[in-house]
Length: 596
Image (cartoon, rainbow, N blue to C red; front, side, top):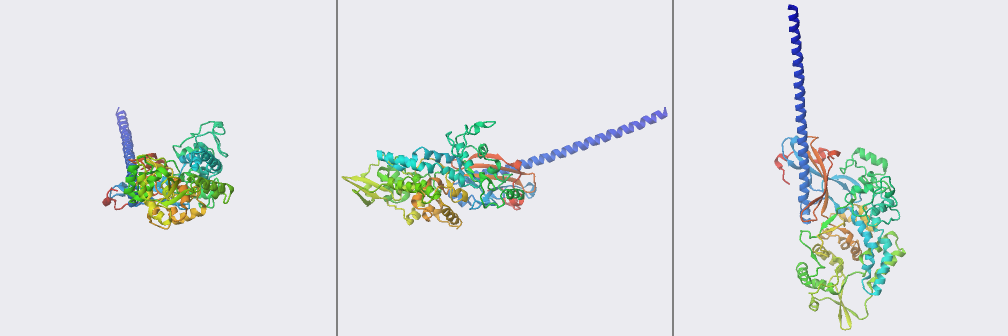
C-alpha cells in the first residue's frame, strides 16, 4: 500500500506539471493573439489615418479648384505647386505617427516624352476629349458645315451650301481620325474602331468595326455604346485596344516608370520614349493623352459672369458692353452687327477654313485645298458696285431699333475684327467698317479684354477644348490645320517664360503671328488656355510606417457652382506609388500645423 501511495503521489505531480504546461501554452497563445490583435489594430489605425490624409488631400483639391482661375494662379498654379507636396495633416514629433499627403502626376515634356513625376494636378483640358470627337464628325456629316459656308437663304445660297458640304465632308469627317492618329503608337484601324465605337450610327468606317461586322460575331457578343463613354476603361472593349496600349508600361498606375518597367519598355521599344512606333504604346499609354471630362467654366479669370453678345435684350447688352469695354463706338457697332452685320474674314465658315487648313497640311498645293479656298472666296462674295464703305460712328446707333432682338448672331468673339455692317439708305447700300480691323496692335491690346469678358453662348461651361499651353506635342499635332513647323514654334514659345497677359488666352497664337486671324477663327472652337477639370492622384502616408499609406485617384470638376468629384477610385492595392523620400518628409510638422 505504501508503494501504491507513492506511485499515486508521483502521478499527481506529473499531472500538475502537464496542466501547468498546458496553461502556460494557453497563456502564451492568448498573449500572442493579443499582441497580434494589437499589431493588427495599429496597422488598421495607421491605414485609416493614411486614408484620411489622402481624403484630406482630395478636399484640398476641391478647395483649390473652387477658386477662380486667377486666384489659382496666384496660389501657385496647378502644374507644380508646393501646396501639393508633403502637406501635413497629422502633426507629431514621431515620424511613425506624422501623417501627410502628396499629389503626384506624370510629367510629360513639351514634346510628349516621359520625364518622371511632378507634384501637382493634371489639367484634363490638356488631353484629347474622346466624347467631343463624335460631335465634330456629326457636325461635318449633318450638312451644318455647308450651311455655315453658304450664308444665304436664296437658291444660290442653298446651292453654295450644297457645294460646300460635298467638298468639305471628306476632309472634315477625317478630322477626328487625324486627332487620334497623332497619338504615339496609334494605328488607323484602332482609330477608326474607336470612332465607330462612340459615334451614333452603325455605319462602319473604312478601317473601323461595328456590331454587325465584328462585335456581334464574338463568342460573347456585345453592342458598342454608340454614344459618350463613361470611363476610359471602356476602350478595352474596342477592337484592337489592349491594356498595354491603353495604360503603357506603368503597371502600378503611379505615373512613374521604375527600373523594371523601364526595362520592359526598352525591350518593346529600344529607341526609348522619343520615337513613336506604330502599335507600340507610349510609356504611360494612351490614357495619358485621353479624357472624357475636359471642361472650362464660362466666366472671366476672376470668376465673374461673362457678357453674352448674342443676348436678345440689345438695350441691356449695349449698356453692359459700354461699361466693360469703355468704348461706345465699339459697343454700338456690335449692336448694329446684330441687325445688319457680316463677320470679318473672307466670309467663309471657320469650319471651311479649318477644312482648307487640314487639306493643305495633308496635301500641300493639292486640288481639294484649292477648291475649298475658292469656295471660301465665293462665299465671301464681292462688294456691290452701289456699296460705299465708311468708318462706323456711334451716332448711327440712333437709327437702329434696339427693342428688336436682331437676326444676326456672332459665331465667336473674333467675328468683330474686320466685320462690316450694311445699311440700306435709299438706293444705296452703305457698308460701315468695324472699329477693329485685326491689326497686330489691336489684337495684342484688345483680345485679352474681349476674350475674358465676352461670350457667344449662355452655357455655364464649355467642354472639350484642348489647352495649348499644357498639352503634349502629340495632342497639339493632332489639332487640324496646325502644321508641324507651327507646332514646333508654339512649343518653343511656351518655354520662353513669357508672362504676357495675352498668353492667358488662346488668341495669343494670332497675337504673336503664328496664325493669321482667319486661321485663329478656324481653330478657336478646338483650343483654349484654360480648363477647370483636374485629375488628382493623392498619396496619404505616415512618414515612418511603411504600412501606413493610401492612394486614391479622382477627377474633380470646378466647372459648376460647387466643385464635384466626377470620378473616384482607390489604388492602395497597387502600392504606395512612391517612396517616402520622394513623397516628402516634414520634420517641422509639429510646428507647422495641419493647415493648408
